[in-house]
Image 1 (tube, rainbow, N blue to C red):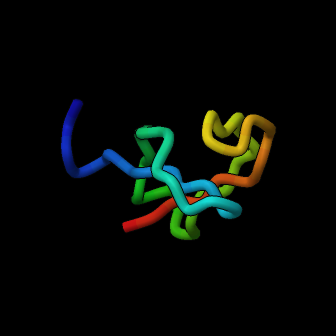
Image 2: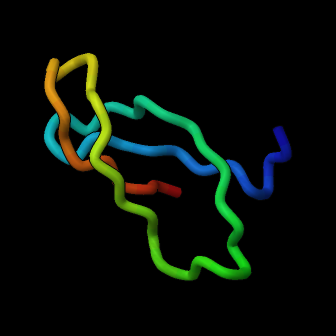
Image 3: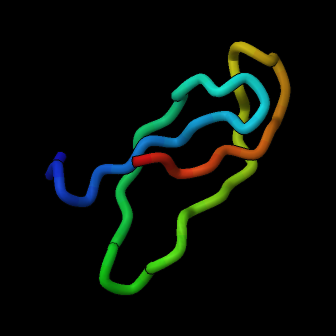
Amino acid sequence: MSQENLIKMECSVCKHVNYFSHKNKKTLKNRLEMKKHCKWCKKHTMHKETK
């Protein structure tokens, strides 16, 4: 995995970092938001991109 395109996805409810993903930073300027499963909350929650 290349480090410059790697992003962390954090749960908006419990604030745990659950996922790592890639993003093309030239085409996507805004922060990424996805609805993913959180193993700490045990349900689907919104996950936001962190620094």
